[in-house]
Length: 88
Image (cartoon, rainbow, N blue to C red; front, side):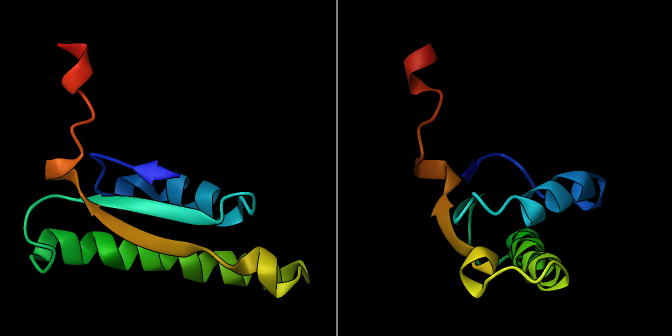
């Protein structure tokens, strides 16, 4: 699943909850805008890690196998994604 143009803010907790319990998603790619080390991107990184933690907790409570609890989070540059170029 690719997350593009989204900050995973506190108002998006419902998305974090939904992604956490959807074990069919094994890979989560999160777009970062600008310097990966800036405070906005550090916040997004912490929220993506929260999804991983909530996934593990959710699976543990349901006694699901470890492979179901795994969620690989990767990052990409939103600046270079060129998602909307073909729509012009």
